[in-house]
Image (cartoon, rainbow, N blue to C red; front, side):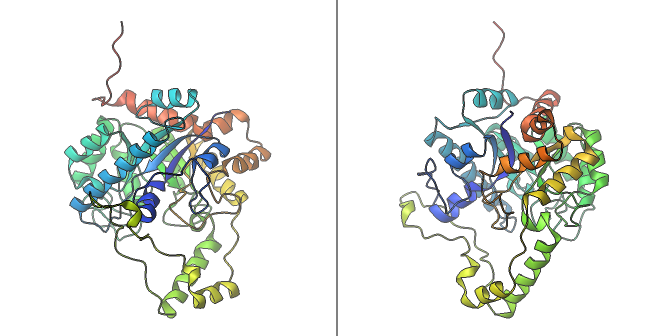
Length: 392
């Protein structure tokens, strides 16, 4: 069967915030993470888009530097485990690496703030191997509207349309996860190559702003793109989303500190990374008062079957050639039972098989669809960034 090619994993963020970018020990079980090489193998992962996320609250120049550091972390991770990981920049690379029994490591930028409104920076990241860019994260950019903010430019302005066109001209996938619905439509109006959603759900199943409405799924089919369905519990389940809102309200009522606004710093050149204390937010259950509230108001259980509902709906509307998987592991603590780490993908495939999915259709979902989109984006690019070997 086709290995999984997952659209979104935030391990680089965890490496920065918790380990000072140390990449050691990933070839052993790492229970404090959702991702390690043994569990990637158990989950039948053959390709992974590593997210080089940095917060959209950073200034754009800071975001460029921090994103460069995240890209470097992916390269260092691949270099540390050459028997298991290899950087991939093209569809052919992905197939070759999978054929060698390794995990193809692709790179996706999560938010247009990371290019500082510069096509030159975009092209430079592309030459470093970035294969998609999410147009926004949780803040609007000056040129695109986010799902988490009030629209300011009605989707895309002229700069935003120019960014989309340039991305497709050089073969970088346009990722519409995190953007407002009006931005989804504006990008599809502009696109001449397939677009993706790297980690989103079906809005008809759960009416969450991060999910994709049916009219967009229909246009995605016509565009030739792929929606990679995510496992984030509040996106999957309305009950989980409601519980999260109640939990946030209780946290505030208790007067507990809000999430840190500081992006974890990278090690200084002369600094031992091991001496940097972890700086991502601590486990909220460490707060006794909040722990008591959770005991009285348990988090709703979200199931593999509910994730399968999102996948099935996207298939029903967009078609089986336009669905994939984007778990968002190590980017959230809120995951379904049975999908708590990267070893869980086979459970979802088993659930879908029980619903009548054929092996051929499961292969499309697992990776063939996103591989097709990668290859089509390369074919339509007007300026290939990775020259092919000339014929002899």
